[in-house]
Image (cartoon, rainbow, N blue to C red; front, top):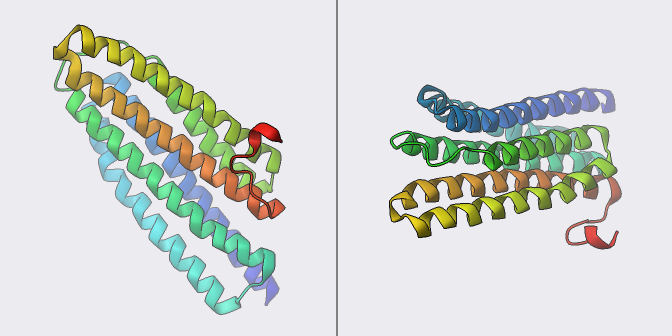
Length: 220
């Protein structure tokens, strides 16, 4: 019975990684649509979110089915429960990509406010955090999980820079307010992507070590 459980758990992990890859890619696609001012690509993001939502439902069903049939104990139970939590974060990453795509659709109706530099950097950082958090889960790598959590500060710093820069635009020219606010929201959505990656990394650390690293990184 344990062999069958292990095989199905591996399949479950594979499904989780596929969802993680899709979530990471949809964020990249949303930001690319913004940077390249590509309306068709933004609309593609809006359509693709449905597939990510479906993945969440299917993986949650598999988790519940696995627990009901095998009634795993201790570490195996924690692993399945953790997957159940992680898919929720991944689904919300997809939601953030949709939010960015919606802001892009609005921004494309107006001239470009400014060259986009920090937003693509934020996106790249957040995507890498998400990838590394999932790799940490697969490999039970607590050091990688801790590193993901530390990098969240870099994303927060860039988000603060974006806000301050756009605030200057708004105070100097009220006609830029709507476009500037849309870009501020894009920054916040990317910050949330990084937050979800951090949530996953914290869960991985707890899964492996049995202790939490929330609010403890500075002293450890």
